[in-house]
Amino acid sequence: MKITNDFNLKWNKFKHDKRAFISFILLLILFIITTPAEFICNTRPIILVVEGKTFIPVLFSYSEKDFGGTLLSEPDYLSKKFRNLLDGIPEDNYFDSNDNNKSSSFDINLDDFEEQEPVFLIEIDDFEDGVNENHISPNTNGVILKPSKKPLDYWVLWPPVRYDYKYIPTQSTTGNVVLAAPYKTIDTATSRVIASSWIDGHYLGTDDRGRDVLARLVYGLRISMIFGISIAITGTIIGCLLGGTQGYFGGWIDLIGQRLTEIWGSIPRLYILIILSSFLVPSALLLFLILNLTAWMGIAAFIRAEFLKIRNFEYVKSAKAMGVSNFRIMRKHILPNALTPVITFFPFEVTAGILALVSLDFLNLGVPSPAPSMGELLAQGKTNLQAIWILLPTFVTLTATLTMLTFVGEGIRNAFDPKRNN
Image (cartoon, rainbow, N blue to C red; front, side, top):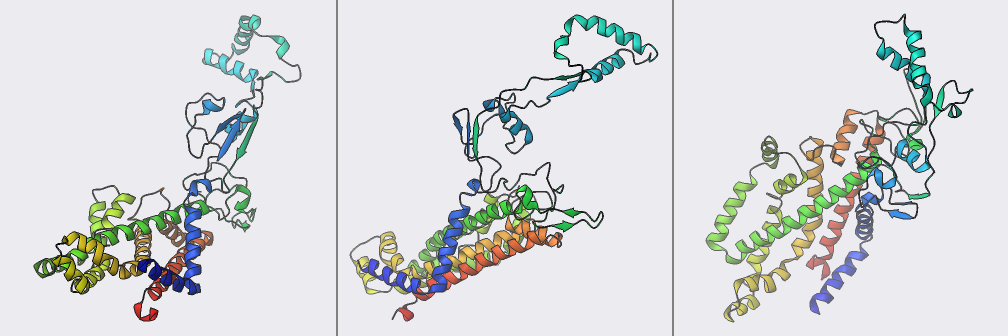
């Protein structure tokens, strides 16, 4: 009950800090929105009902054959071919018989062009019985129409943005796929007005490869936040274990641990990453493991100091006299009273993790393409300074996220400060 009342007191104090509390709510909303990014930005429909049968392409993969096609591969739901398949329009709705006859006659008599007409007449005579003249209209000039399929009864629910982070469209209504601006521009070469990319559904334009900027920003923000939180959690756990062990036992364990920590902390992470990237394929897991090599050092120092102080308290000495094990004393009696620096330091650990990932991606040492990343978007914005729609939204999103995390960290620090609580 005492711990609950103490936590409620600190939580109420945190809520009274309007700047920190509003920042916390906004970050929570951002995290909730970006976590199911596949339901916000995706080239697959959320729900597709065809002839009464329900498909959920956003979660499961289907073949074109499931929708009445012939291929076993997954269809491109945004393509005109797939729309024609649902609407009952054949892929090639007509062909020219004259062209086919000419090409076949040329194939037979390539070396004798003078005899082309007799060969042509012979070929028609040979296949005259196989041609149904009722299907050839005298007004089509030899164009034979293929019978159309019956249109399918279907209903589609699309995500708000019909692109994901890696989809590159092959055609565009505006005629511009690469570096399409979300506003009207003028082509300096032809003086032609290029329409906004909103027509094609690119609400923040496209990057230098034709991928949707908004989709890459949403996916990149999700990866950055999850990566930063994961780094902070694992760094906190490792730091509590190592720092608590050093602080509780002290003596040679503390001395040797501190010297090893200083030696390990002097090795720059960037050099380690460059060396490992030379013979290992860069990935999110590799970055996570490398950054965790030193992410625990800050929190370990705080936990060590708290354990050194609390281990000399009377209730700890009483627990030792009663024969309680060292692990139980550390877990049940010391750690709950040493969590103030852990909770206070956590938002700043998240900030450091996000900055580390963005910096490595900006230097092309992070997650390889086409994985979405805010650092990669910033690098594209630096390369294409005229494409302000790439640099500006990414910079604003990253700055706002880090600023709000800083406000939350300051609010937690003020709420858990014993001097302020008194």
